[in-house]
Length: 450
Image 1 (cartoon, helix red, strand yellow):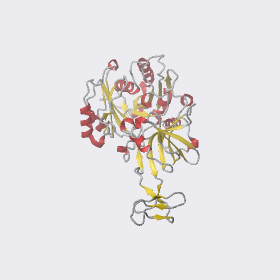
Image 2: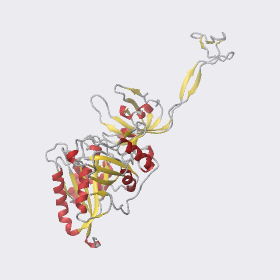
Image 3: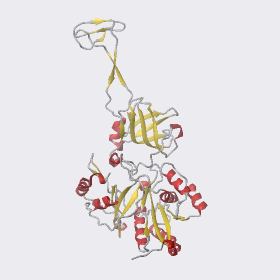
């Protein structure tokens, strides 16, 4: 049994991002191999690996825009070889010169500096330059290394700085060998449905009940076989025991994550303050009637007193698009959105990923009066001639048109796309009243293999 002396231990936070490769690797898979290596060094784990999703609107993001942080204690005498071993592993995993891979790797010792925490907050909803991350590591003299253009440095620092203290969920990620990445994963549809039935609200967003679509398997040629999302590590581990696939699991790891928390949408931003690639809550009144354009997308605009902006609800959002068509001018809404930059064909636009209807404007129809004799609706008798009833012949010049309030089929509340069209960070309806706050005080005995 490993024995520890408190004075001999150093707390380490390792952050990493964009560790992909043309042979089909991904950052979480690399992190899982690093966990296995560190286990051989008998580190003391302080947390599950943290999978931190960042602003999903960044155009140059990696798949899912997810970075990883590992937090553990290690014997001080091993510190000198820790960083060099991690670097060796990253360089062996990636391929130099591959244009879409720009790894960043950072090590923070003991307390996390405030500058790192602040960068992590911004990375959830703003677009950040690489230079901002580089200034922090240079100023704080943090051990780090980058490859390519170094964009992964932003995510690596942000993963360290986000302790997932306000809310978190868990994901069980099962992997196959990278060499088999081109094969069909063969996740058994019926086993996922049965898993979802057994687990109930202990798991979420693993299948779309509206379509029957299975959501746990990625589509790209990478080592992930499937990922199961849930509220506790015990839950996702149990859930995985029910899922069958033709591809055998070479390894698996439980990650603590901000998926399903809506952490990117916590800032209400005025129209005049919106900037490209922001993730923002924008509150205002519908200023134009929603219309469907070519491609099945719905367009409308809102105004908040500081400005007016076009809004797009795209075809893949299906049900959300149908709800958007029911909006009318004057409705007050809060849009969960990302900001699309302007181009030669359009101005700054909100890409809508959720609509919260706050108040509904009154819709009024102007109708001809009812005949006082027979109860039928009358018709105009001509300009300045009043109204006549075709049913009984009654005529009058004294009646006027009536305003009638029309019942709205849209109700107040939050509307989201189907689960299959939601972002990793989107808080699904099933989690609206759920929060897992704080950090774990202990880990389950077996949270990864091998």
